[in-house]
Length: 163
Image 1 (spheres, rainbow, N blue to C red):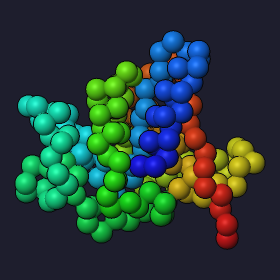
Image 2 (image 1 turned 60 degrees about the vertical axis):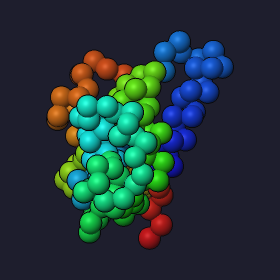
Image 3 (image 1 turned 90 degrees about the vertical axis):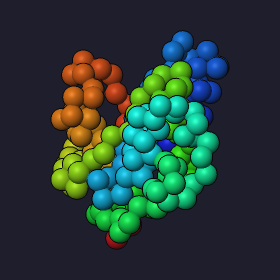
Image 4 (image 1 turned 60 degrees about the horizontal axis):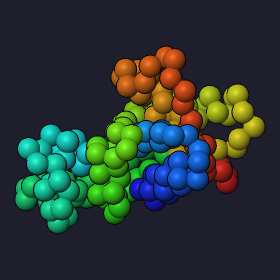
């Protein structure tokens, strides 16, 4: 959540300071073992009134709200295991209704493992599996047809392996 929110702010700042005239779209990456932001995005996107759904209080899945804790989050990318995304409203609003609509992508455990191996084999970045989640998201998005082969993409590599 915090990295995605900071990225949105940075993209807005670049455009405001004379960078590209259109802001790139944000595609937030989550893991299939813990994807509360993707679940919230899908719930809001499919609502008859997305704005009304965005303002409902957080609670449980039974009351119509879009964000509630993910049960039993699991992944080798432990930094992705936020059971609740606290700044989800701003992110969902931006990805759904913002200046450059995008959306979340859900990576599989295999995507995360493959991305980590690719980064370690082809770069000098000593990233951990969490830090390669951006590449895992790209692998998932390409597989799912969310990104065209000719599109220019930027991903973030973060999270140094410390052990």
